[in-house]
Length: 153
Image (cartoon, rainbow, N blue to C red):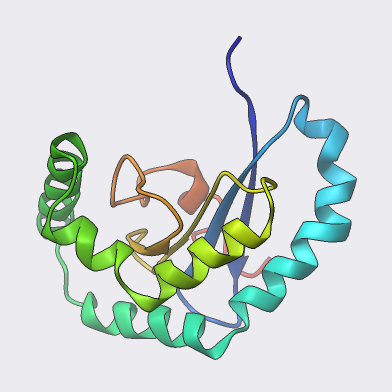
């Protein structure tokens, strides 16, 4: 049986460049939509308002301001290679940062509600994450395009 997930994507417009993706297991995603809105969304809003989260995103947005698409593709290729190899310097740097530690704690405190939480910057690159993602650049995927690029409305 294929595992299905409910994906909660939140683009926080008060913090330019912050997009959060949360995957939660669900048998039928539509059956859980109201519970997610009532329970999970307020929790997520409190996490992303944390000054450490905002600072991490702002810092990475500034650090990556001048990245070209070629450089982004190179970083993503490195990440994928490290994922296949079981680790490396890029994965270690991201998983070892304070935001990733915070997100891992949030996931663990959720007692199984969340399978994965990650925060992306204004280019769709992971800033922090609870677990290793298959790729580093989410900017070519709907989870980033349909949130960050959608804008405030």
